Image (cartoon, rainbow, N blue to C red; front, side):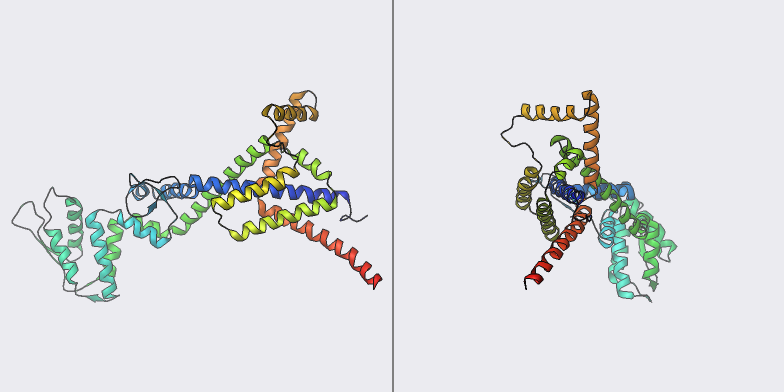
Length: 372
């Protein structure tokens, strides 16, 4: 007898099919949970805080048009919501908005100068001259005075002249040189006043890796918890699943494998599901998996379920405490197997499924040739 024709092959096909069904069911519930709790946004915010420190707090709390309402935030009472992942350009632009007013204005105008000048030293634009005039008119004690004062000190080092005003509380008149290279000035300015933004840009690739790792770890933790709840709550210990698969006929195992592979492919193609679609998929899984697993129906009372569960536990070993420990261990094994993920179980089931279908075709073809 070949391996494909053996009962162990049917058992393995049935067992892998059940694990695929469970993995799909856990995945569906997890997608709903991630949507409700804004899981990706939380992971992104955490990775951003670890990466940028206090600057990230300003970015997350500030009203810079970055946040969106959460799934249950119908009324926006405060500028507080969830932040979705940003690309490098968006992150740097957003961080620049968190900088003090005069730093932000000087940075913005220097970028305009770079666009107009290119990589050549040219005369300053009217906009830059106007900014220098505004900086010189800032009075001591006014909003942003010390930032303006620090910028003026830096400008003096970059060949800008300062003529002190007759008013003691005003910075004075600032005049630019006849020509200057805006690209060099911008680089020096950002190094002096925006070093955290430069660092964020230089290490953005590493930050993306940190976020992906944080998000994957968060997903795995969620998968483990949801799978453990399913295993314990629905008595899906690995021994019971194996015994159910062992009692299946080759035809039943093949049909079960085909239905779950089709369901997985359908979910994989749709990628993002609406809540109505998720509810529909859960109902399909209840019909396909829970019924196949000899699960208890809604008519069973909690007492009946607990009594049946305790009988199963006692049947595992004597004394009952050993049976309970064995049951918990087998539920943990089920949980770990589910954590391998639906893609892995789909690949395993697909391999078994193709082998079984290939065997069936080889059996049919010779009969047709003999008949001919």
